[in-house]
Image 1 (cartoon, rainbow, N blue to C red):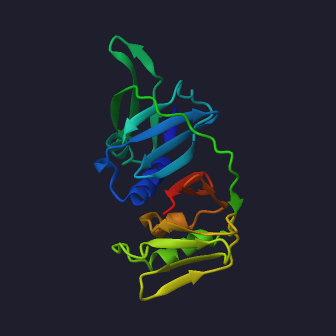
Image 2 (image 1 turned 60 degrees about the vertical axis):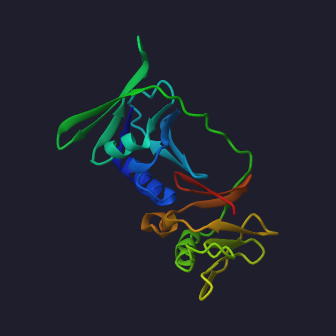
Image 3 (image 1 turned 180 degrees about the horizontal axis):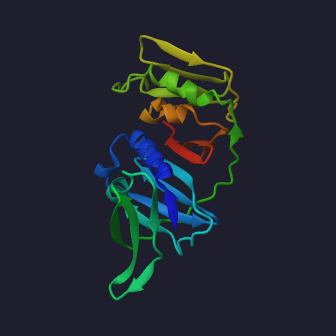
Length: 232
């Protein structure tokens, strides 16, 4: 199974911003879960979750089972162009293993991994609602008006007000408020901690945006991406 480096590098960029650290420094796993003609890539850290439905060459043989690799290994294999290839999981005398292969400066690179199986993907019955495509840009604008170091009055948060249809943030000295949105939580306002992801240009350009509340999480889906943030 081959996955384009462009998808993997974008996942790395989103994940590093979302989790606030380089992936190589995080003790976490990145999951690869084959589904039909695609592969779901998933990472979770500090209550946040990032999921991407990556394209897979339809002529390739899919992974024969889900696998997980360390974030440090993921960071290492996403430094080049081209594609990354996963071998099938095979049983050996020392347990089940698989190999990841890519090329760096035309030199073949590979990692041999022991099988670690990720948790199954949990399908939510909560429907998300389509929202104006200006929403990600609104998150970017509002995120620049927070006080991320504050421990009082939730000045490190963005407010998503279902009654007013606004995205708001303040650091106690300035207020940014962008309106004109129809959130599915019509009777309440929720707080979401500011996140470096909101300031990425690639994030603000995402289209086909849907949002919702799933349990105690604020969920945003756009294109092939799903982002989950704890509600404060």
